[in-house]
Image 1 (cartoon, helix red, strand yellow):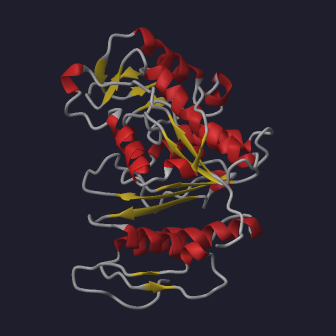
Image 2 (tube, rainbow, N blue to C red):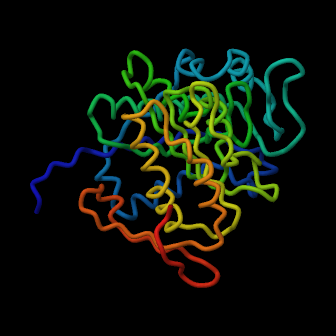
Length: 318
């Protein structure tokens, strides 16, 4: 056995986040407590729970949430505790704001608390890493967060948990100068992008389905951030179905890692990335990517064969 010391991996799991769809939609809605409980049971079945360090979830404070969201947004979230449970559309603050028509969002008396505990759980995990108590972590929380903007609740999301945690890490208490956010959900993290698109301290990288009306309709490769943060938003928009592990690993190797590694030594990431991301994601012919250099991190020393309807392609990525 190796004597090398491996630091603990943290796990936040809130089994008490009882944020339910209305009874009329409970059997069919995709955002239910079972979404996280089945993952937790799978970790147990794989005998991984005993190898993880449990980090207790907590509610995000008002100050932590206000580092990302408007006061109006947070007040509207708090008001849900006394509102009649229902299915609604998105909520947006500002003039003419409020709830829109729709049935994708739902709320009950526990929604505000569940959202605060989800965001606070991610913050607690982040703080554990910053203190050196764990090396990394997995936050198994709900409701999700990446569609929530500073003044908008949408796509099942009420508080943007990863944005709250990133801002906590960048605060004087957190002590970081830069944060990388990688979003590999099939849907574009439009809320996270909007929150950080002018923040040069955050590099936001997203891989997602794009086009043909796929929700939320954002995340073109041409969206790269603005102002002092121009170049710090990187979108990899997949226009075809069927992208799997090989394509995602290849995107990490060919796009994410070179851009992220350029940050410490440069005032801005490589500015060619919009064209590379667009051409790479829309390519009809996917080459093989092979890496054998021992100087690269172990996570990237692998061969990822890209699938194609006409057989395996060949050749290096740009």
